[in-house]
Amino acid sequence: MPASRTLVLVIALAAAFLAPAKAAQICAQQGSVTIMVQGAMLCVSVDDPTHALSEQLLQVWIDRSARIVADFYGGFPAPLVLLRIQAAPDGGVHGGRTTNDSGLVIQITVGRGVSASELAADWVLVHEMVHLALPELGRRHNWLAEGLATYVEGIARAQFGNREISDVWAEYRHSMPKGLPQPGEGGMDETPTWARTYWGGALFCLQADVAIRERTGNRVGLQTALQAILKQTGGYRADRSIDEVLRIGDAATGTQVLQDLYREMKAAAMTPDLKMLWSRLGIPQDPASQPFDDHAPLAAVRIAITRKP
Ligand SMILES: [Zn+2]
Image 1: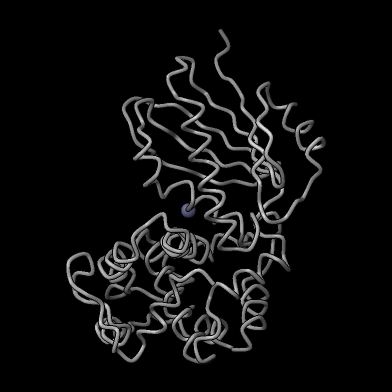
Image 2: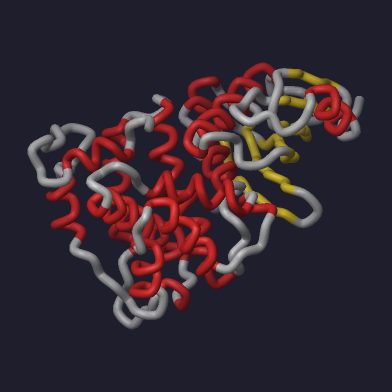
């Protein structure tokens, strides 16, 4: 019995990068089972000698995660990705990792007892796929890569209908404060702690999203900037400077928000007034049980962020 098997999913997405026959040929070099849809391609290998993981469950999960990310970006952010699934004891979806050493690879660990509902509620694969949409910026700017993946995961899933909007804001309201600088800490480029990298980065994204929408009369937001960055750079396959990436994003929204915010936060500890921000957005203390305030000054901005454009 082989130690691993490979199934190939050719996910149907907005942009068709490769002819289906060519796609099947490339993926077939990785393994044996081919499932054709059309468009961008994920070659999926499952390392599970016990064959406990259901191919069908995995396929539905991978397909949905890819569509969530493709809908947010206006197309899946890479033409060809190897997705390596490692089986583990118990259930649930465990850690993931995205690399670009010799081709784009997402590694993710899934418990053999994982249920359909656990896969439906999974954030890990969406987070990893969001990494595909931003160029490699270097270790110093990892906070932007992780912050974007953290921020976009919730928004993209809410836009797709895969996550409750109240749940997304409840998590942001609960977790964004973790991203605030602690006493003695410096700017974003100088403080590679877990909290500043993930939630400090996500807070940068939220502040940018709100500021872009305020400056454009809520016509566009961070999503428009991110789509342009992907389109003009090719995403994670490319190495770019953070300055170039932020310039591309700003040009797409007709603002200077990303460059200005980065200039403020890169070398200095900034502590935005989060209480004021939640109040202006109309977000209650506990969004899971309390209503949003639709008369708040930035209620329309809050609503637009999780609405499918
Ligand atoms: Zn990540």
